[in-house]
Length: 67
Figure 1 (cartoon, rainbow, N blue to C red):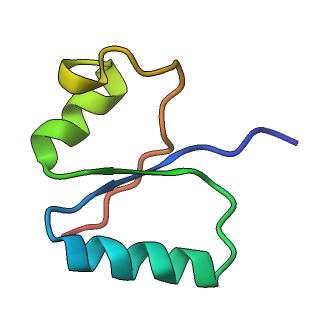
Figure 2: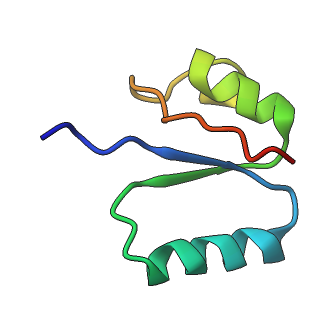
């Protein structure tokens, strides 16, 4: 069995973040969720740039929401 991938959630509205994380928890998501505020941070995260330069290795599984 492979390890769980991190979920990267790009959302600037704190209420939407709370609702999304609550929905994921209701469906028993075992993955770690990392929340970034915008597209710039979403680009920085996988490349360990900006405020993510010191994060541990490993990238999230990426999927477009189509939005």
